Length: 410
Ligand SMILES: [Fe+2]
Image 1 (spheres, rainbow, N blue to C red):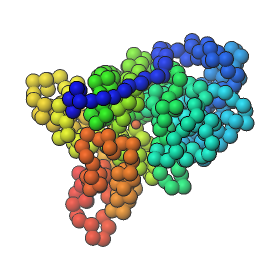
Image 2 (cartoon, helix red, strand yellow):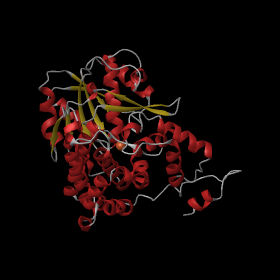
Image 3 (spheres, rainbow, N blue to C red):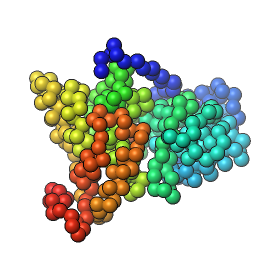
Image 4 (cartoon, helix red, strand yellow):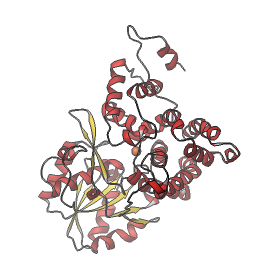
């Protein structure tokens, strides 16, 4: 659609404080500005063990800010955990919230904030049900991994463990007040986490750039994030002491978050959400593996934009027309995945997937109402089934055609 035919609004309300050691230098002073008394810290057990939470609590205490820690946040935080966190927030009479961790810690604290000031259960506010009406408490985020962008977005993903589903709670009221983007915190990230979460950031940028809600504002953010990730993710993966590469990737992740916070994400996320909810596949890894397959499916919807991305990965494609350049993108992304040791598919996992399991995944993916409508190509369930069959190891059960075996064996 031409720009002259579009109308849109863009809001980027989170203050971003970037820099090595920016948490140490800025967090207590920034918190004091708001004249509050006690902060609820949501985090995961790993950061407590690593001593990071203790250091931050001491930092705050030295400035007279009291805190209480809830450190039971699990990957893909459960609705029950959110409700327990909210109870602690109320019992301890907290008046602000600090997330320290990856996407799970930040999603968790947003959800705690939502039920701290709005009545009922967190799942009452999932997309398609009730909307949040009351402001959440002041929310500060310190991302310690890259990839999620949750420090600048208006969404929280919560798992209903009983139903085996991930649900999105979305509201402008969930947008954090301040994000402290401090690359020194990513120094100790394990290599495989750097790879998968960095690829998640790349997926955010690509899906924001190509999605139907993209605008020239989000395009600028998304393209910048893609460039920074292309240039720096392999170096960040190669050596934890490469602080420059870590800094570039960390900020790129936030920039990609700003882009998809407005423009949304698409089919890669629609397909990965059920894989995480039903089979606990880590979000970033599922996205990274799915990306080339979904790109292959989506290319025809917008050759021009996919060609622009391909030219970032291979500048010689500037000499080629859009269709030719776009068609190179799948291989370029496969190579990029391989450079950070992301597998080409899930063929090596022991679990085998039956037709029924694939159909369930596809049904849940089609039901991912926050992402499916934003995909550049109109998605059909049959297409999603085919994508899953390419990435998951299939079980050859009675009546199944032999071609599945060929697919699994390459
Ligand atoms: Fe993501």
